[in-house]
Image 1: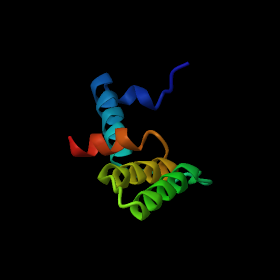
Image 2 (image 1 turned 180 degrees about the horizontal axis):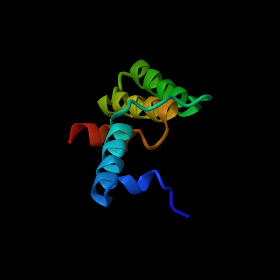
Image 3 (image 1 turned 30 degrees about the vertical axis):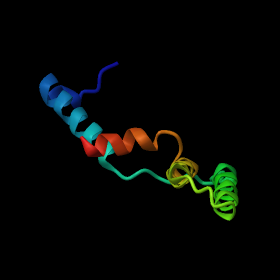
Length: 87
């Protein structure tokens, strides 16, 4: 079933509009999860504090905490969005 309103536009015009909308959606900041699960962040923070108390700091742990926090707040797909923004 075709929409008579769409017949006034060429196929190229319609494709361009769809591309424009895809670009718009991809550039919009992600929406945070309604109920983020911070259990991994908490676990990593506990490990980090324990390491500090033992004078065994690992700089990678701070990066892992950041990654876990971003994924808890925005979901696993956050990295795809971030990478698209950088390109």
